[in-house]
Image 1 (cartoon, rainbow, N blue to C red):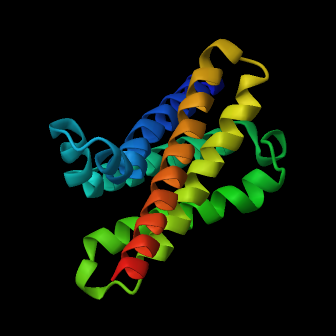
Image 2: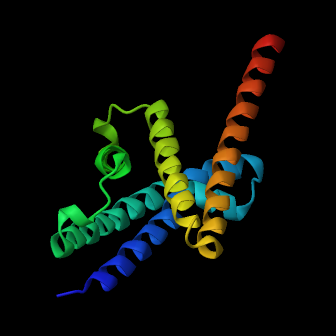
Amino acid sequence: MMGEMTIRVAIRTTARISFVLFLGAFIGNALHSLVPAASTRWLKANKDRFTLGFAASHTVHLAFILTLVAVIGREHVFTGWIMLVAFPIGFLFIYALAAGILFRQLTFFSSHFETLAHFYLMSLFVVSFTRHAMTSPLFYTPLLFVAVTALGVRIAVAARSRKEQVFRASAG
């Protein structure tokens, strides 16, 4: 049986792996829009694979969290609003995104749903990294910076796209 510290290391490791995979899914299209290069084209083309990898990695992450609860008891695990509400909703979004990829022909999710899910999940990473940066700033502050920058890039690209649509509509 794994000890508490081993499980906690596994939880942190799977969270970090999940973040990297999610980052590829979250930022690929926007980066390609800003910098149309071979590497960003590859990110965009592999967005679905990043999403499925993220869902798999975060499923392992969830398994380690549940293992920790079984080992130390529910009363010793943080039970604030993040654990009780925000994270379960996050997992629903993760699995809905994965289902949308796996069952594309059956899906009823729109691009608006995908955008909502992506921003919600990235916001959870920002909240988590902010919380952890309070105690481990050397490691978590760069992750927080990357997450906030990714949000900014997505927002900037969306704003630019809307401006271009308005310009095309008024010119045409």
